[in-house]
Amino acid sequence: MQRLEIRAYRESDEDNVVALWRQCGLVVPWNDPVKDIRRKLRIQRHLFLVGFSNGRLAATIMAGYEGHRGWINYLAVAPDYRRQGFGRLMMDEAETRLRETGCPKINLQVRRSNVEAARFYRSIGYAEDDVLSLGKRVIED
Image (cartoon, rainbow, N blue to C red; front, side):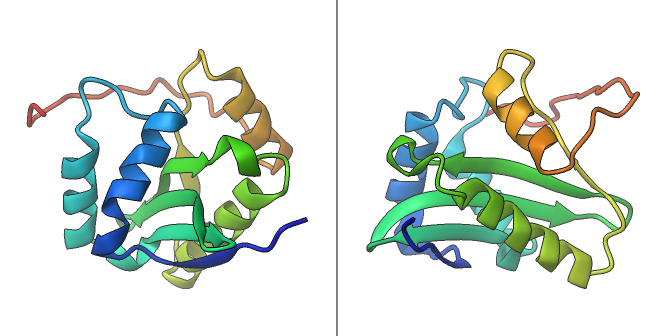
């Protein structure tokens, strides 16, 4: 098993992060990844983490806490690094940092079509809540 070094995101990571998100299918037409990164850097930037293995970007995770719930976004593990525990390591680090802020519960959303991601989250203790997720875009990307 390869080693993963986790640290806070740096601006110099941007191109590699966006490329990883594209490679992992996380970029959709209605979300501009560069704008998402810039927005995150204004709020709790210490909760935007990147993981490197052998000097190469292997994983990312973006977490946040608004005082009631924590949220996980953009968990990505490069295909070459999957099945090595990197996703779990990234989640563990994000959960630790959220817990340190006093966060009592963490939520995340998975597209219904992403069966593999849902399976992963269930395997590390996440369960489907009996809620309807609603959203409203207030700024068009």
